[in-house]
Figure 1 (cartoon, rainbow, N blue to C red):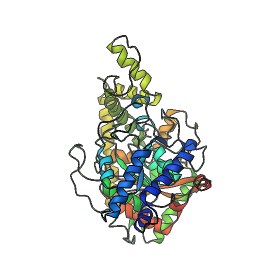
Figure 2 (cartoon, rainbow, N blue to C red):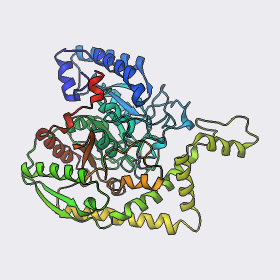
Figure 3 (cartoon, rainbow, N blue to C red):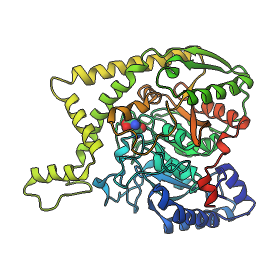
Figure 4 (cartoon, rainbow, N blue to C red):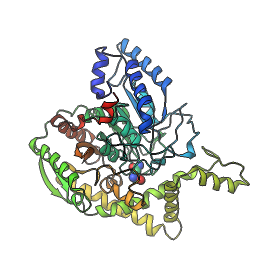
Length: 486
Ligand code: GLN
């Protein structure tokens, strides 16, 4: 049961091969047995999951099941959940229980999904390896010495290990795509504004976006159908109809124009990752697509611009964690200032503090124009690079990450960690959608092919990835860890 896709699980539920309760019990059992080795969950919601599964089975028995009824999933612990704690991977929120559900949580519950719990993540979604979590690092099920990627590392590891068929992550600079690549699963970052951010703990509000992480592109389409759409509670959520994202699946790729950004195949790209990505692109050529080189000339400004904009927004967003209103409060404060200072000093981890310091500096008087304003101008140029490229091609393809998953502890220097996001970050600055799709291995560690499209072309991206998955079986590979512990 644990290696099936959502689409396959629905067929099994329909034919009564097993019930949602049986499926849920099986997966909860696997989490109990295996997650001690992975650390992919912060909270497992046994009772709520079984109650939701029973409700889903009743809905099905009444003939009212929808496409997601009774399907288990897990939520990155950045989505607020009523009655279940939401930590954002931080000591600051270790005791925080939200009084409401995030919009995404509400919608997925209304669609009949069964949440098994909350996934581990880098603290406040800041990181590329899941080593910044207050709850300890997550291990990659393909190789327990490797990181799963970040910041949605717990979600990616849980799906890869067969603990849950799908998970919901967030992507501010690559946090869905890079862990999907490192763990050999399929992940989609939708267009900025496609999915409501209401109830999603804010890191960098102009970049954050929620998206599905699953075993196939088809599953991502099914999940996006339930997640996307306007929400009055998020003013950046676009008012635009939601197509049926499964409808384009099945469209032939003959005539598709693929662009390969030369900047994504340069120095720093692991040669074996490059070989896997180029082999994947040959599959698209065999399916009738044409391939040409394009240029995104401002690519090398993406990381510097991001590391001005994201920390600036983070320093503002995280000012609400003051020891008074949410979460952690220090013991025996001497006075109000001491309470603020020590609650923040003790509640936040090092990477979060580093970003608050950078962000506060770049927003301060005298530096704002030199840093923040300049970074926003650069951002516009980066966006324009993509718009120009999409005048000539339908999609862009390249690696999701310059290397396969690295060893735990291997990237101690923050700047070398920041450089991990070289191929993903510009996408958030431009607001366009992007996917990572399994496309091979380096040794036992997966490689992700990144597929990018212009704003609101998720349906096309999902089909492009789906056609690849019809022609290949990289997404069908499971780590030995999942099989040995079946
Ligand atoms: N790794 C990037 C960062 O640390 C992106 C994280 C994300 O997408 N949430 O900010």
